[in-house]
Image 1 (cartoon, rainbow over the protein chains, first blue to last red):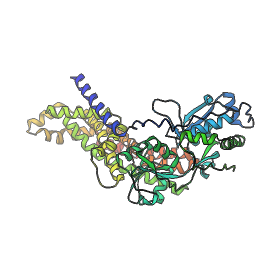
Image 2 (cartoon, rainbow over the protein chains, first blue to last red):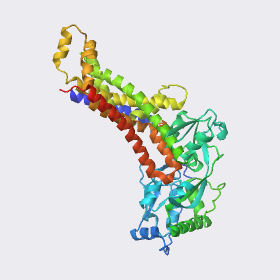
Image 3 (cartoon, chains in turn blue, green):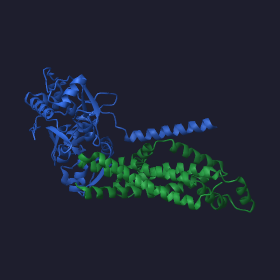
Image 4 (cartoon, helix red, strand yellow):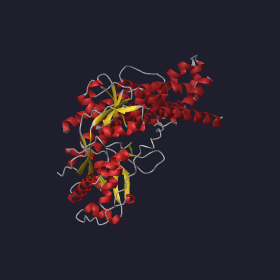
Length: 299
Length: 220
């Protein structure tokens, strides 16, 4: 009797799990167009790199690895695909590009997942040497960490269904807009577009699920992240293309290591000058024709 | 964003948590009592139904239960109210109620089994029905016996409300995320602040249960 009860219970749990996953799990990404895919860029490792003035660089060099904090859940920027262990995306390419200039080959980079709540503590405690994780430069954060860059200026945009007639943030009145709970884009919607109804989950993939099922009318965050989703769900979603904020992405570094900051700034500048930046962009986010390279801010 | 604004943000988060907790608590106590009653009832169908439900839901992670409520129910076209924030609140309440009720029921059942069988037999001898026996003789004593473990279940419910933030609910964790996003320089103090807020809420609950225990508990 006990056994029977147990097995009934487990079957029921299985059904529950299935129904839960069918709705909420990230659906399989459609195969990406093979022809359009750009070559993976390769970066020349600068073997003569020497930044002994930088405590961070010296420690990393001695250890033989550069610890980089990245995001794992943003397609196109910093994303770990199901079944894969290595993250990939524009942030990752930037990390590789900078690391190469600092004298670290790609296999000497150790990636750590950083979410919004642990970026600053990890840098302060020295758990990681730099953060390349859609990290917007702002004054409050500058109090505790340093920023090199920006390496890209994103803007908040909208992801909508292919046949949607939403053309910009002013069309959001009375519409349901999804974003990640606590994120800057979510706060912008709450403060500036008060007539829109905000739906906030903990990950963008739940938002995308809701957009697919029609439970929300738009997903909002920085355009670079949305480009990633639009690419993943080609023909289903589109990015509106009317960015309404400016989010300069910087490389987060431990506070006070000016030599390191200069080195990273130089590395970014060099990458933009010699075309590596453009290759990295095209490899991960698609055509860079209408994308401007940002100006490095050496504050 | 300076201190008064942060405090305001946290207070609205605490209000969200308290709201979710209170509604789910009432629901869980009612549903839990019904389930406990079903488990000790003389009808086999009711007993099996209750224990199946309890075994399934209690052994499913709460996140999964909430996932089912937040994404499965709308899929089945079960919606409440017009705004999605109200909908999410109801979904989260349903999930918390469904989950906590199992633990309430199990706790109550253990209270019921401390009551000597003689009492139920005596109740039946004087002509009370099963419902009357349960509601007038057994349950009042069972509740008073299980006040301390019930307190733990209810404190667990308070902490479980934090999962609702992942499903479009405005509460403490949600407020903390908002605060961290704007004040990256204060991450550790903000984490401590959130922990402190939960601690205060739980301590208040603990005091209430200490008081109830002193006043009501039956020592055997």
